[in-house]
Image 1 (tube, helix red, strand yellow):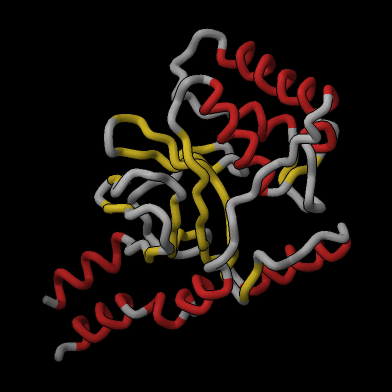
Image 2 (spheres, helix red, strand yellow; image 1 turned 90 degrees about the vertical axis):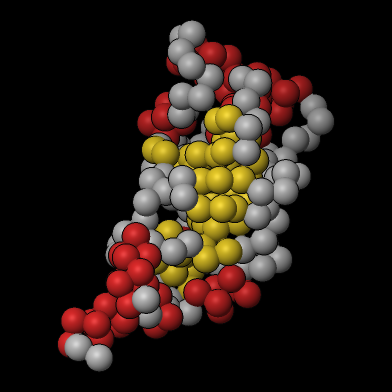
Amino acid sequence: MSLAEGNELREVNETDLVDVGGAMAKWEHFPASAILHHGKPCCRVAREWIFSTDYSQLNGENPLTGPRWLRLKYKWGASVWPISWCEAVRQKTLDCGALASMANEVFVMRGVKSYPAQFIQQYTEEATRHWRESWTDGNASDHWIKDDLIYHEGCAVVVREGEIRLWDASAGWWMNPKQFGGYGGLVALRVFAPQAEFSWGAHRIAPGRWQRIQNERQGLALASAG
């Protein structure tokens, strides 16, 4: 084996150094976040405010347009759960679960098929240490952090039959199916949907279970090694 081939194989195995399997096991039984409804006018009015605001912000554009206004209105940060609609709309800061739950409801209200999506992303232990401290200061659970990996939530939006795009409501953007690893890289995905299988770019997504996401560098290195 040449030095170049050895480097390629080491790059393929980079994510093996990260405990992705342990993270998937840790979050195996995590349900997608859902904002509670009291069944009273307080929550009904709050939901109607979100939907009417989205209608005005969309302004006749394509219903598949990402609701970026949510991220502009709410900062990303710690939330204390459970949280209801009447509480959530009054906050200045919401976590990924609350933002994803709102965005999912918005897409559905527009007549778009949208399903809860869960992500595992890799950052650095310095970053996760800072986030852990922030969540502790906010009296919120840091269950979503494991070493340099985080649990994150978004929306799986059906753009055509059998094809989805992933909306990251906390970042206010569509996630790129061509992942390259590194800081913020997506290493695993789970989509809660009734359909048998979706495509996300070149990835085949079987709903209801965690699956690893191979990045572009891994794919190239594996092809070269083969």
